[in-house]
Amino acid sequence: MRKLAVLGLAALMSLAAPAGAAEMVVQPVEKIERKAVYGRVESRDTVMARARIGGTVQSLDVEEGTAVKAGDVIATVVDDKLALQLKATDARIQAIDAQLQNSIVELQRAQKLLSTGTVPKSRVDTQQTQVDVLTNQLAQAQAERQVLVQQGTEGDVIAPAPGRVLAVPVTRGSVILPGETVARIAGGGYFLRLALPERHAARIVEGDTVLVGARGMSIAPDAARRGKLVKVYPEVADGRVIADVEVDGLGDFFVGERTLVWIPVDTRKVIAVPPASVSNRFGVDYVKVQGAAAAIDVPVIIGETFESAEGSRVEILSGLNPGDRVLVP
Image (tube, rainbow, N blue to C red; front, side, top):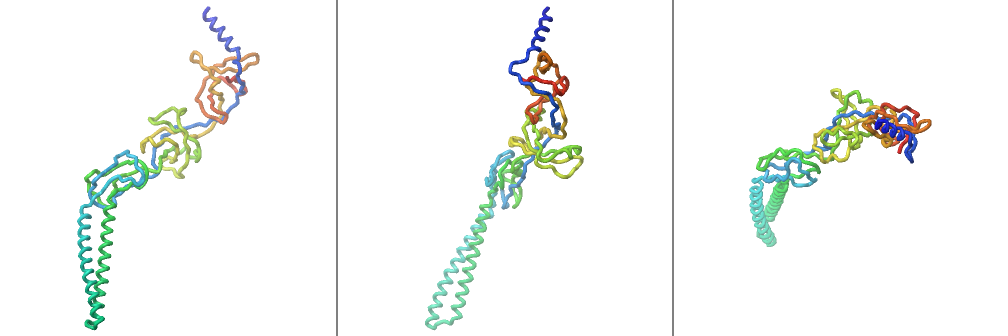
């Protein structure tokens, strides 16, 4: 008796069309077939922060993973010889300056004696030459001092671009040479690099929209972010085609980290309905179809949900035919 009552209730529910339901004629729609591949996070630029002078690393202010801005001081290199050379240059400047002042006095005395006819003009010329030579030597020593001062300021190792530090191959107290790498920085933003099977080479096009999974190898394309295929390299290497994908939100990924990417590889016609038209009772999916006399619930087998030109759709694998009139709440 209870079973008959349940069947009777289900029959009444199938005959009653929901109030305010819209009617949609089922027609095949185009669905994009996607292939899941792995994408690798890459940085656009990998720049080296190098030491401009040789010496000992006195301070090191970054480590792997540190975010830096262009111009940040990431380390300081000190060369003790520069201070000694600077002192020696200062002493030489003082000695040359003393000789110059003495030569100037001698020149002035010779000019006075020349005016009285006591000394020949050749002596004045000799003193003038001596003054000129010492003046030039003083200028040279001062220029050498400026070079040493500039070298002292170049002990600061500067970040050449904003980004994240990938590697620091030196430690505090290390002795390094001019031009040696102190830190390797990934900058310029991040993108995904794909290595696609050769059979998909003819079907991928720059500008295609792809779906990018979350961190942790997420396998749920419904929750994926959208990215754009920005470059396809015109070469097949080891049976793979290389392509680059731009997507927002890669700043928290590790450089070299992999994630799933769904790329469009083909299209096909499918029967699909809006998700709101599908209901589930006792583990069976139903779609309400308008019949000749009344609306009836038709059991269906559903596939995946996808986005089409008409909006979100659920693929119907079995149960509906083109031309059926589906009621959508």
